[in-house]
Length: 325
Image 1 (cartoon, rainbow, N blue to C red):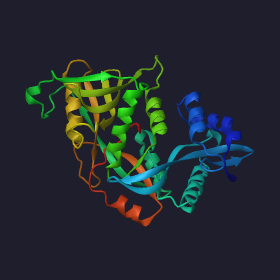
Image 2: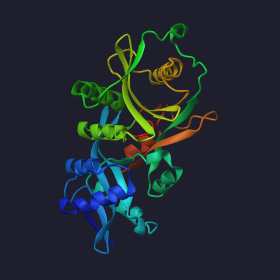
Image 3: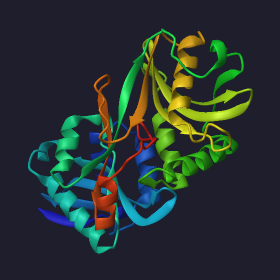
Image 4: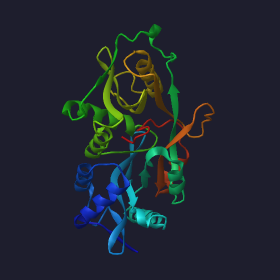
């Protein structure tokens, strides 16, 4: 087993390993590697039998808390091991190697979002020292009326319009709102513009024949933007995956209220489906007997002050609820 840092001569191997483990297309993977791979720096790999058998990517981010920059962190992305080499402990060893690299470079933390909220993944990463730092609850809304502050259930001024994320003006406003919305949470790594665009575009990149349809839209009242929303439809159900509050109006500090108004509108406007699953974030430690808690993100603190912050979160963190957009 050999640990090393990959360079562009390994690109084909890295693409093949990524495609074997995830559903992303080759164009996305190739563009990601071209944009974010720093040769012999941020793609740790394990070589066995003269080939790459495990790899992960460390994308640099600034870590924010309540608008304050806490310093550089790494976002652990696309960790994968070839099928025939799994269950040998390779990835655990590679994560330790990557964490040592990050610590020696003076980074504050390593962040990751285990995909699919599989409890086994959270258990796996916890053994490597990662801690679950915030969670959400998933509510299933039926066609029954949701109580909101909309006067008398009047939706005539509301609209949810589908938009093209490739539209530069739309994306500019979306990214501005993303930055403002996420940086003022208790602890969160803020993605740079290109990476955020790649993540969002990847979420929307489903084939026409897929049973799952994905959408990006703007929720407005009388042409005033309330929030941006990523959601998908599967059969007769709708799933809200990400809500980003617009920073231009009075709703910018009212995530739960906005989320319920949006769910209420979708269910009761008659333009959508029969059911909707809505993710609402909840503070760590809050009792949640009524609804299942869904873990979202994990953090490996590399500095004691970051560990203290992560252990003492008091308020909800409203971000990237299920798909890590």
